[in-house]
Image 1 (cartoon, rainbow, N blue to C red):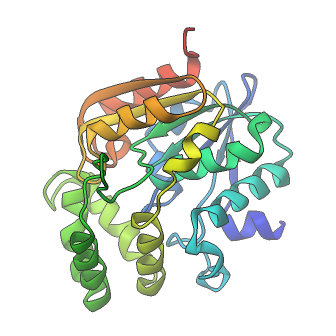
Image 2: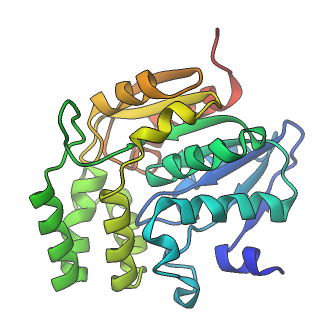
Amino acid sequence: MGIVEEAHNLRVVGEGKRGVIVLAHGFGTDQSVWKHLVPHLVADYRVVLFDTMGAGPTNPDYFDFARYATLEGYALDLLAILQELGVQSCIYVGHSVSAVIGAIASISRPDLFTKLVLLSASPRYLNDVDYYGGFEQDELDELFEAMQSNYKAWCSGFAPLCVGGDMESVAVQEFSRTLFNIRPDIALSVAQTIFQSDVRSLLPLVSVPCHIVQSTKDLAVPVVVSEYLHKHLGGDSIVEVMPSEGHLPQLSSPDIVIPVLLRHIQHDIAV
């Protein structure tokens, strides 16, 4: 097993007759977040699953704080994974920050991606002049401070807010579990990198077709952000807002979300 495979807990499942699908999870989760989607793909596709660096199941010794201070570090990891597997073309499904990571990677290597399916994606979380990202700086500062002072308590409060449900729900418990698994100093660093990121200037450089999929109600990503992406991406794009709630709808509302994701995976944008 190579260093890339080991570091990212790389897993490939499925028969692959219709091509390769790469599934990339967002902050606070790991590859298990795709458990409801994978069974629907393995008969037709080669499915690549991995943990982004810093996720709970990864070795914290591999986490380079300088490398992952920007999203470009993660984009380089993604390209290294595709190279390691000899992937020449794939459908990429990215959740939350990994949607943006895939978009960044596609700028330098558009040949590797036939389409990007962007679930709960945001190019910037902070509000700005003529832009509504959903957060003010003081709100983010409070979030970082809470993470730093008592990480476990912060997880317990953040999980139900993010997922959209009570502490008893299976999805909230699952997200709490994967959040708890991250080393607190790494979680804080990753959260700061994500929430302070701004990739709006890169969107016109993304030429690969993008399928933007979004919950109606999402604490982290207001619905207007999906329209912003649609308007500013450089290639063809389409938006679908689902009647689901929360930032992890593939976990909390699989009955709604999985059919939508499958449709966007299997069908191209009509132009």
